[in-house]
Amino acid sequence: MDGLTIEKEQSTEQGGTFVLRVGGDLTIPFAGEFRGALLDAFDVAGRVVVNLEGVSAVDITGLQLLCSAHRSACAREKGFGVEGLTNSVLAEAVGLAGFRRHVGCAADVGKSCIWIGGYE
Image (cartoon, rainbow, N blue to C red):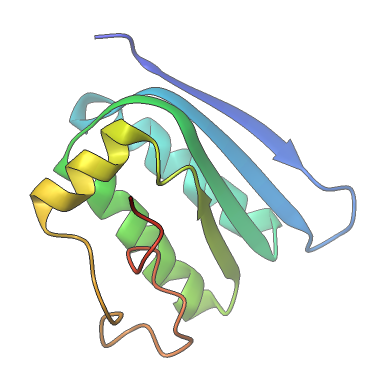
């Protein structure tokens, strides 16, 4: 187990974008740390982007937290995006867990579901 690293990068403009660069294990032992970073980012930014290019392990908990973050962003009327979903570890986990979608869930009124497309 490598652990989880989260680098935070906030734009200087108020209500701007907050980028979380996640590396290592996005798994259940680190779920609380990741959740806390997401909540902190949503409190200060108008848009949150999670970069997952450095993730080396992910489980269903990590995928569910990403889905929950998207739903929270929709409820708060904030932007949310994910980069690096073509990372082979993530792409495999998304497929195995059945998260790939053709249309978003009922909460995805803005048609911004992170699980639609973007996979090889």
